[in-house]
Length: 383
Image (cartoon, rainbow, N blue to C red):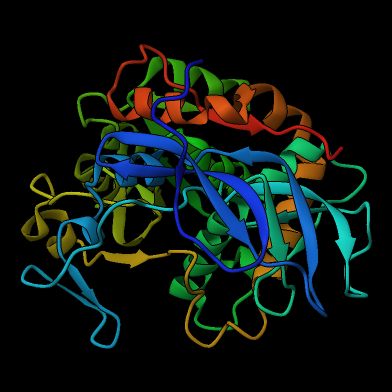
């Protein structure tokens, strides 16, 4: 693939190590950038990147400039967006959060030279890693190293969804499986987050799991993973949940719905599919309004709850027992059991690092008739 855009310099530092990364020079234009990383100091290590997964939804939003930070200002103290505030600008100096690399130099006893590790630092050729500042997850020897792209952030996102379900049903401190064990679970969206969340729900004891997805191709992937799936192209998948699951008179539907698409139509489906007092755990990243959601309908009449489960926080009171490393450990357990299936069915495209900007431009421009489910960028081994 052709690189879309020139090689540009993102910023200058007086000393450091030159790396290349993928950023966005202006809306719609992902490019390769020159950047500089600091040299590893005491307690740090140098990680040479081998694999980097593309999180299409988050990254395409940054390419297009449709994410909230590029439309209005964010006040970190008030934790609110202000239409009159100063939005984030361009260039965006880095994209991505699903990296696997090899430790080539170490000045810490925590990381050994030659070790494979997973981190969240973006599509860049190398990184000065500081385990005291950001989690560095060892990639076990018995895993396909490419699957390490799911360990630092993507898998923990999904595990955190189960943790929020547990807290919603059983309160802070509840075991991870409390939100799904013995329950009827709907997952809206058969993207990577939806499919991993569905597999986690099965692994942690859900009575049944049903996936609602408008794409026939992605429903086929769900079926290949052993997950029943129904068509939600017309927003009517909620009927399947109501027909399938009956607890009693006037009590039909899913106990919990994991909403894994950034579309208001999927949230509407999730709400309509729940039984009374059910819970939507929302893992989607919305970039617009929610015109299809009618809070005066099922949300109001059935006493429903919507919980936002983003990776920036676990449920209140659970941070001490569920650091990122613990979320990653649950992901490792899933990949040990289902890694071959994940590699075969989720990872659809593996491309050279240099092809990343062109792929992101095509995704942002909706030019691909069959977009990748999971694309992974491949880097050269350290010389």
